[in-house]
Length: 501
Image (cartoon, rainbow, N blue to C red; front, side):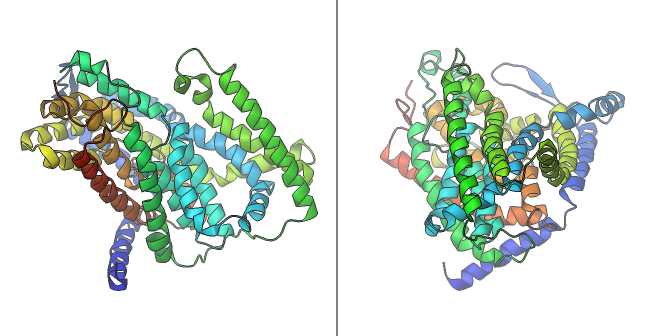
């Protein structure tokens, strides 16, 4: 890419940022969107769609009515408390916040900065983000803020570090070297949809159905994410001029001693957690469905809290229970803006779900795809674009596939594409738009993290940072997908590209 083209692309991103930042603050925007959903539910009340596999009908629930008004008032608190990321973010940040307030994070940076190969930092962040899907959504809470701190400590722009980690966590959600709970959920939905065409084949669909392609994609997304960060996002951001500061000086003797004790406590805690994962918290079913995996947010809290506590005691920043309480209170105070944002975001997500507008849009989109008459590469491209569009209305990967699988899997099987391949195409399309849709449950979380470094940062700034990742991941994945198809490599163990009845 020439310098002139880079300047032109930067101008486009600047325009997107300008336009996006003309929107109200995220808190007010979600309040406006909540009101818009209420109005739209009244306009489209009575619109219904039929599930092609079950025959059940889904209709728009009218919130612009007396019963809707009752729902709004009666569930306001539940919608806030039930906002999925709220509890996970606050619990995790209690642990991370203590480690940060006591100075452990800064000391750990000091210990690693001068020994860590700086040229590998971006790749390491993107890779860690991709692999974090093992812990389901915990990566959204842990890695972006740590990426920002690490970049800032190295004299780089903190938002570039946040963007690299966010791109890995969200855009790389369809890739991993290991199987995750997402694989298990999608496998169940795919097999159920495939059974309407070929029950015997459906029973052969395994959790590892996309593993070959997903594992290779780790290399692809890591390389693309690193390139976009270092060549597009960070140069466009320029030198950081904000007030936040992470000084990287040599460790004092006290800090070295405290860091040593904190490291020992971390290793001991890690060993205890490993024992719990194969012992009391193992459960009787699948390891991915074990109590341990269901408790990862609390596990992460403990892994940060205990070393942070040990470090704080050693450097005498924590001398009694009042000091500890004060530090934890300061951590929660720093999250006050996010808590306020979670209230309006929670209402919007709940209203959208209650009205069934997302489900209606998904089914109407599926009907459109079926009516196009496309097949082959054309059908795959339209399927990707349609899924990307629907992702702007329904953030949950499993929720979308619950709706789309019964429609698309049979269609693709009738065109000789395997259910496993169809699921793979869906995962690509779902992943590449995660980072640019405000309806992603954790999007407000990332905005709140970013505002710690740019207090006036708006949605437009974040979206303009993430669009280059989205485009690069989409193009890269499509190219690799078509090459994969041309060669005919299975997408997973026993999972061919083509289906033959």
